[in-house]
Image (cartoon, rainbow, N blue to C red; front, side, top):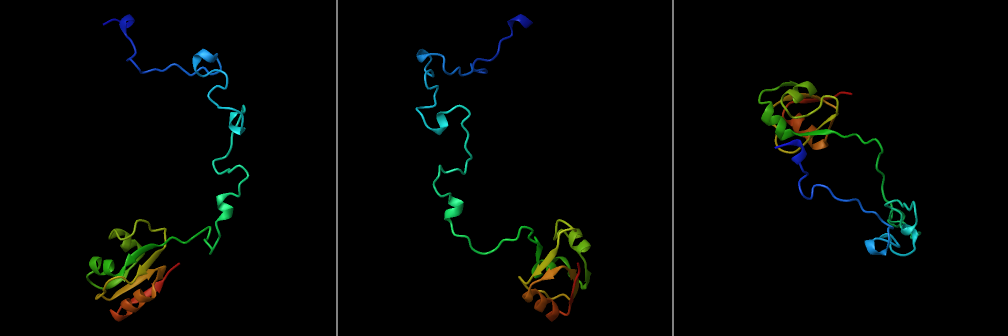
Length: 148
């Protein structure tokens, strides 16, 4: 094999489309843009959401409710998951929840939900809890402390 005998694989490169180079080229005259209209003009651009003067979809659909720009996204843990991971009672902090693999981040707030059963007295220190979770924790003999 010599350097002068090297060749590109067949079909690896393609000739660029030269528009407007005569009728015989197949893309002469209107250059593949059809006839007239906004999109046939030079420099023609329009936004994806533009509907050509028709009332846009975002304005046609009725608006309801409110969605916060900065929502609080809790890491949720069920009462049943707490019962599985913490078999003996004691204090449960966010750091311990992270060690047990129940939450991913220490910096994001934690909320306890009342799914399942709890039969262990736990003293929880979290940011939030549902009403059913508060009831189940207190019935099991535990306490709930809210932290910032």
